Length: 104
Length: 140
Image 1 (cartoon, chains in turn orange, red):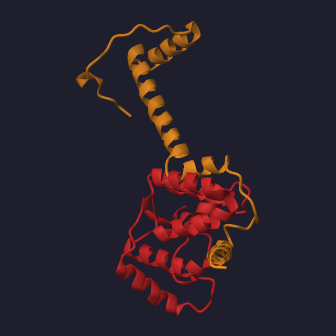
Image 2 (cartoon, rainbow over the protein chains, first blue to last red):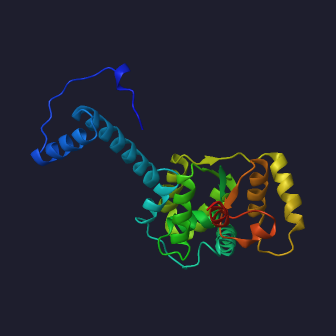
Image 3 (cartoon, rainbow over the protein chains, first blue to last red):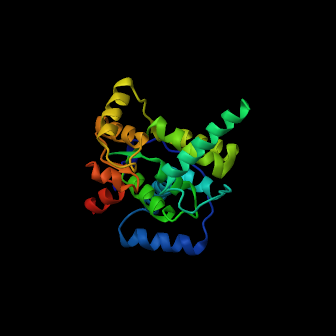
């Protein structure tokens, strides 16, 4: 992906890099005929995009329901999903019985 | 892409020891990665809360519903027309396998032009709807 950096506003910050990482980055930039700063911007942009995508796939949609499920204390049958209509009917019956019991 | 989520899928997702859990989680991921929009009927949430009440308790059901409602899933309104259409569909059912709630799901799936129903219930297939798992396999 080519990013048009020239039309952007820039901020200047000072960062410290581990020497090995800096050397690897310099070598790669040199091999590709690019400036170190361009490689750095490309990698940062790509990393941020991948991170956002990864977060999206673990937190979006109904993924939070899966996460919550791990903390819930379910009781009862293992086949709850497949036979949910039967268990819903039983629950409705129990609820009806509860109402009957109020008038005993 | 639209997928209507049914009660068994919600339970399958939320209940780690359910036999359908791994399949439900995989389908959820695959659909979400394909930018599918999850849509639910209020009747599905009602059915889930009814089943969940005895198995999870009030607090568990509340937490679960809160997570579903906070997600980017959409709860679609069920109109008078939808309800009547669901009843017409219910009248055609010949087994007790397809509940009235299932018929509401099918009516919404038709009205919203859903690509699939996120459920494992073969009753939907018998009524001409595609289940999410088959939909994913077909797209591969």
